[in-house]
Image (cartoon, rainbow, N blue to C red; front, side, top):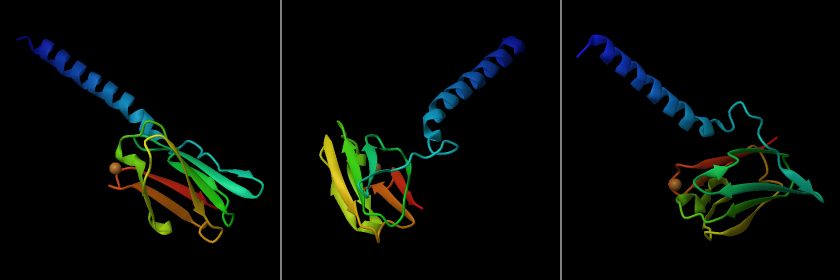
Length: 131
Ligand SMILES: [Cu+2]
């Protein structure tokens, strides 16, 4: 086989691989470089909305510290393990319904620092940054 053809094939293989990596890596950049969404405050109560399906979205939410907060986790046809939510700091652990919303109360005292939530296996996570 001609050496030039081999080089051309190798080069295109590298390019295709790089293109695939670029496309698949893009959605995971969420949170880095992008401004984190903020919680909404209604009548002195703070709401943080997170969707659980194949992971958590948004991954990072910025909230105000020291305000009673409702963490609202929404599932919609969620059959993966992101339906099993664990929040170590709150001693919270629950297997959510595949579709629905779950309100998790966070007291004003608990609304400090970074609160991390995980799936039961720890492969997906989200953070609420109280500041
Ligand atoms: Cu998991």
